[in-house]
Amino acid sequence: MIRQLLLAAFVAAGGASAAWSQGDSGIAFAYAPEQGMGVCTGDTAEAALSCARDRCTESGAAAEDCAQVAWCQPGGWSAGVGIMHNEGIHWTEFTCGWPTKEAAIAAGKVRCEHQDKQYIADCVVAVVYDPDGNEIPIE
Image 1 (cartoon, rainbow, N blue to C red):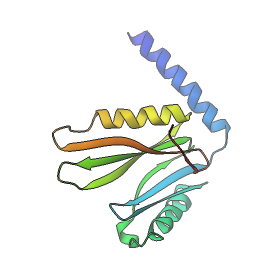
Image 2: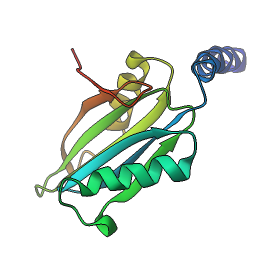
Image 3: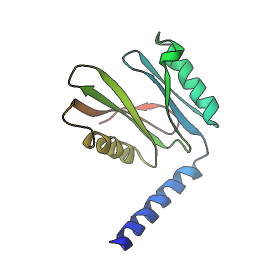
Image 4: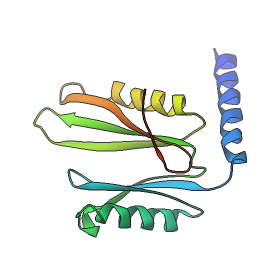
């Protein structure tokens, strides 16, 4: 069992190093629940997170409502996971730094699988971003 885990870690590290070879740019997300969000890439966490917050405010949300919620370097592929509480409130969580689109989608699905089903009415991988921060349709 330990050998299998080590092999899986080695394979995962190989995928991650492939993403690093594509550049050291990171990706950042800022989110204001039920108001807006922003995504930016950049060479530093500070620059990308600040840009993401600025883009979040473009939707009309106040800067203090735009929480800087995720940063990955290298940025890799990312997924936004839409979550709906039984009482109707909804929000988005992000997972980033994945070597492929498929890996980002799979990570988002795992995030949904581990939500407290007693309180969550719906959870879905809603959006995917490429390493440049472009929104990519989910087929």
